Image 1 (tube, helix red, strand yellow):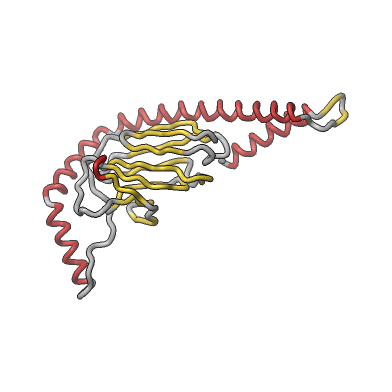
Image 2 (cartoon, helix red, strand yellow):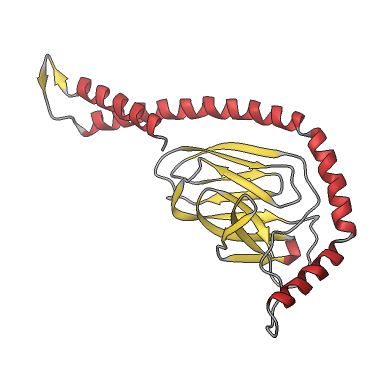
Length: 235
């Protein structure tokens, strides 16, 4: 929960509780019904604020998509050039690795998968303790029941990129139960036959590799995640 919002909800709940617990100036013990009423009012107020935020996000997504058209054209031209000589690039990477690791078995370190650039895609959904799903193009995140203690506005953005690149907000949101992230890698160059992975990244640097399942038949990879950040497909 954002700190500012948290204080507003607490202030609202406190003011309602004081009103419910007073009778002609004499404080009384609140009943279960009164407490439930206060909580319901607080939840409704939070839901309405999240709904307004969602509508603002959707307007922002529309602007971003329209502004992104030139970026998409440029990214596709770069992709064509990269795709034409990626085998030669990978060969050079392997040779560099062997020179740096004489006599060792292996190959280049884990890298981010390169793909045909896609148009900007984004989505925003209000998801609460009952769980839910948010889809962005061919990618999706399934949040199970019990993962969230209260409603949150979940925002997901897939920028125009030669990576399978997906960012989530609110930044740093933690789950009580792991959510299942599915990233599609259709249209990507698969340099190796071994399984692909989901990578937690900052910039283009891989920070973490959560346990992943490569579903080759579907051109998709799944991973269990417990916090929000930026994710991509690696090999």
